Length: 218
Length: 149
Image 1 (cartoon, each protein chain N blue to C red):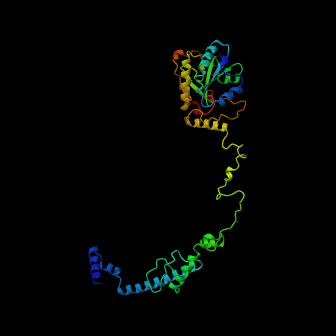
Image 2: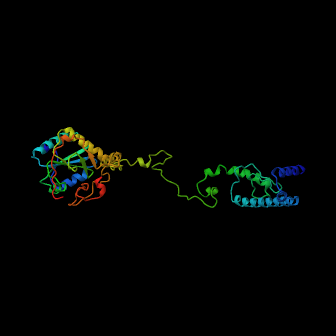
Image 3: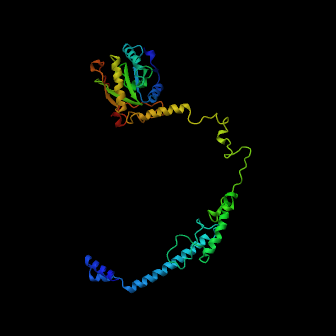
């Protein structure tokens, strides 16, 4: 406490704080005591609420948490927060954790050997996966027995239709590729070669007869 | 020699040729097959047609059969050669009064080849008029007829 006072005074001097401002910054001792008591109460109330919430979440679970051996001590006496390990009710303590452990070990090999069904809801509480029935395929075999895949068994039926573009389309595509290499500002780049023109169509003669747009005489 | 080159004998065929030739110079020779100068020109055209096949397509047009285009292009002397690229008419400055067509025959095959090459390069660059590389002495002289224009 005296060192603190010396330090505060040094701080005032070094930063040249005025007297009025110093009063504002100082917290009187009574205020500090009041604050620390209120803080303890608030922290205790918050931890109690957290424990209740976690107890509600973990109660419907069939098996206990990931690490079986840790018995979480009752949190009422200890103020420091426990690192995540919560017993469903504070009263169970060590007895409940020890009693649950052998039953969890007995269930460990269980789920993998049972059928798919309601036992899978340990991942999603309240929602089961839809069961579509056993796949019976003794005659044809399946991927586990090493049978031929369906896309390879249809060889004689699908070979008539060719996949992909025909030969003419391929040639046309090659022509289009060559067109793309030509300079884009060449004369008549946008000329539509396939347009149907009537009997009276005449090609553009570059404004020789004073007819046509002005750019045609460039 | 004119039997070596394809001929167009109606307006529809000429239209078809103009519209369908793509990315190559279209050469239309307007004249008559039995005219003396036309025969000289047709000889040069036929002999160079194969070498220029990647740059140019050559057709012969009889002026008596396609009168529409004879009037449209104002063909007064034969042979007259008109050049197109992608449906657009190409003008060439030969040093003669008329830039829209080449009147007469060429002196050598090389003159014609050079001219086609210059037209092709100009068209690729987007030019509608180019300057002829032919020596002006080799260009046939003629008088342009003005009829009340």
